[in-house]
View 1 (spheres, rainbow, N blue to C red):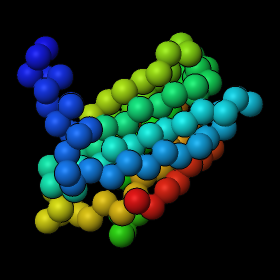
View 2 (spheres, one colour):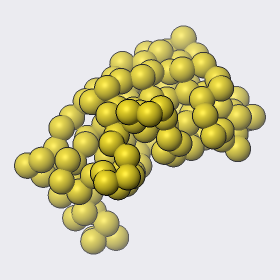
View 3 (cartoon, rainbow, N blue to C red):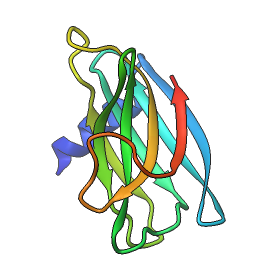
View 4 (tube, helix red, strand yellow):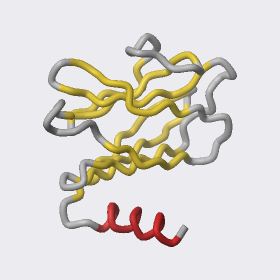
Length: 124
């Protein structure tokens, strides 16, 4: 656990990090998705706060926005009002260049491309 905490703290406090806070509205409530992007390790720390819980058959899905479209990043079923925090490894920069992030509401099993309502789309 200590190693994981040190790794997360290094991501948050790194010299090559960028913080982006994205206001969102879900289920009539105002929330935020905060992305701390590390440009050296190519990882993001993502925190979702005050998003409306999903319906039982739905989940939030995070997407990497690339030059050629979107790639599935993480499926986030939120069943409670509790914030959700995750660390994501970006695709290799030699394979695809990630330019931003997006989130949509998808079936609980996830989708290969966005099909539901878009919560946000943000270039970073």
